[in-house]
Structures are given as C-alpha cells and as structure tokens.
Image (cartoon, rainbow, N blue to C red; front, side, top):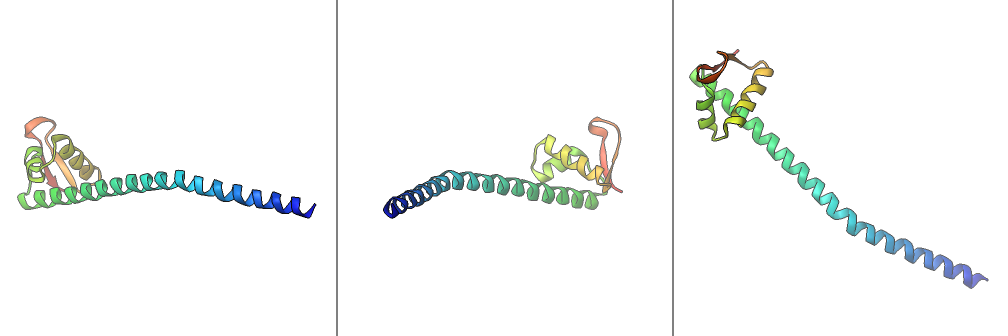
Length: 109
C-alpha cells in the first residue's frame, strides 16, 4: 500500500515537471514577441517625439514654415509631417496660419 502511494506521488511529480517544461516552451516565445512589440512601439514613439522637437526647433529658427519645408527637413512622408504638426498644434505649441493648401504655415504660439 505504501509503495502504491509512493508510485502515485512520483508519477504526479513527473507529470507536473513535464507540464511545466512544455509550458515554458510555449510561453517564452510569446513573451519575447511581446517584448519585441513593446520595444518597437517605444522606438517609434521616441523617433516621433524627436521629429516633433526637430520640427519645433525648425519653426522657431525660421519663424514660420510650411508642411513641405518641414517634411524635407525631417526626411519624412507628407502624412507624417502633417501628423507631427497636428500633434504640436493640439499640444498648443504651434499655430496654423491659413486654411488649406500651400498657403498654410506654422508659427510658434
């Protein structure tokens, strides 16, 4: 009877250890992927904030600048330049002068 209990406990321990090892094989790649996604998002945020600060410095230096000038200065797409300028405007750091098109310029507030 005591041997039977000992065998059951030994089997239970082996099953637990095998299950834990199998779980680690599944969990670790997922954890690494999540860390990779987080690192990528962090990198994009840092890059975006750096570009926003560069755009702000460029506007400060030139007193006013258009989207195209800022886009060329930063080396980004038109959409990215618009996104940065929109965010700076929402933050209250710059103001848009003009409604639409090539006549729009941005100045410090």
